[in-house]
Amino acid sequence: MSTKKLFIPVFLLSVFVFASCSKKSDDNGQNQQNQQQNNQNQQQIVDPNNQNQQQNNQNQNNNNGQQQVVDPYEGWQTHRNDELGLEFKYPKEYVFDDKSSVKNIAFDFRKNTNDFFIVKLKKGEPIEFYLDTVANSETTIDGVSANIYKLPEGYCDGPGCSPSLVVVNSYKDGTNYAIEFFGTKELDDEKKLILSSFKFL
Image (cartoon, rainbow, N blue to C red; front, side, top):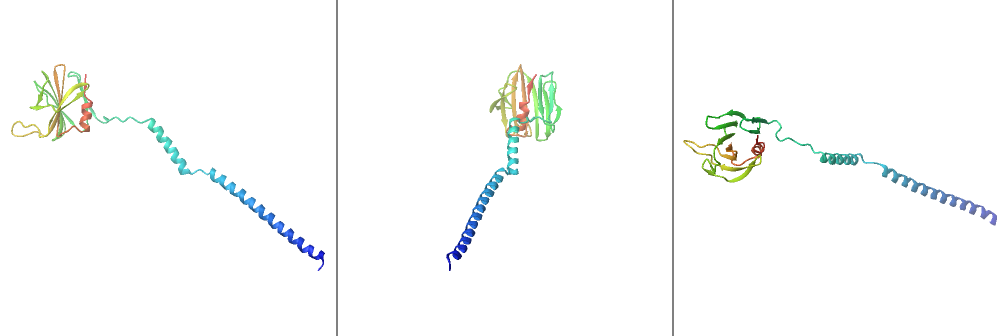
């Protein structure tokens, strides 16, 4: 075989190998370019759920900065007596009844037979005992000191005993202001709100 005849197949094989390598190199370059483009696209994609969560967090922070004030006395009634110089609020479920007499002033606010409170006003000296009971603790009514008397077994005077009760008595300008809470052994949140609403006019 002549040298010239061998040269032609060898030359064609070299061209074929070179073309194959060039194509593979181009394909690798294209693949790298496509991968970079995909990475950029993935970075640009925004998770809508995550975006909504961020918005909710922002709204919550705004709400925390502007908290709405809830009136604890919403829907309550107001009892005001300018002559006696007294005002307070009570739940609408309580029915008012004036139990005053010539000697004593008494306002009855009754939810039911065993759940009611009575506001009594009596002029005279400050009292140390209430219904033969010594004070258990102290509090204030509209900034005026008051004693708390607890009668967990009620008050027995005569043939029967009253329901358990807690009495809060304050003395101001020669008058004892007593609030008798019947049907309870402790002042719950509702009764504390009633006490907190008391104002001396």
